[in-house]
Image (cartoon, rainbow, N blue to C red; front, side):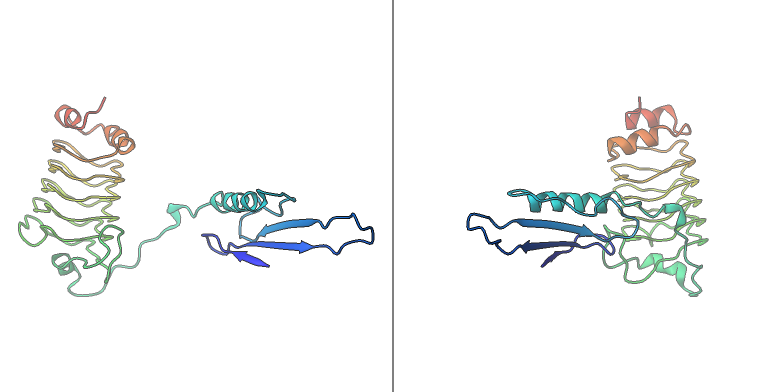
Length: 235
């Protein structure tokens, strides 16, 4: 019996080849039966597959892959933020940032900047990696955050009025309900970031790097003025 593991929790594909003994008649041929099964929580799309000749292994593999990919994902609404850090110097962690995994939001130590105040900070945040940082309800008004990396950061309800995000990587950042009035997104990567109910009056989007689908969502924000919409190419 051969076992092939597929990605996904608790998923496995078992292929078994059973050769039946030859019956008494001399001209009878052995039959090969292929049976595959996948056990997976919340998955009922694959119990077995019938006999095939040249493509039986491929068919079983495709059916198992379908069973995995159609399993219901965990809703994002079920995710909860951790308790507020009790470290006395947690706000100063922004001046150090992360040292690993910037693009994937991996960190060597959690960065909890919630409720911290960095108003008009022009030197300590520039070029820092704040991947996966918790930034909700923090104040960054007037700060220089150029060249910063904020992959997978959570900035819901934070204030970034007049912040300089030039040449920054704001990949998959949640800016829901954030105040971004007058923020500068010059040559800034905004891939996968969301701005639900964010305030974007007078924000500058010169040479912003953003995907088409993300652009359509951003253009739906009615607080962006005519100049900003023209820079983005909103229709």
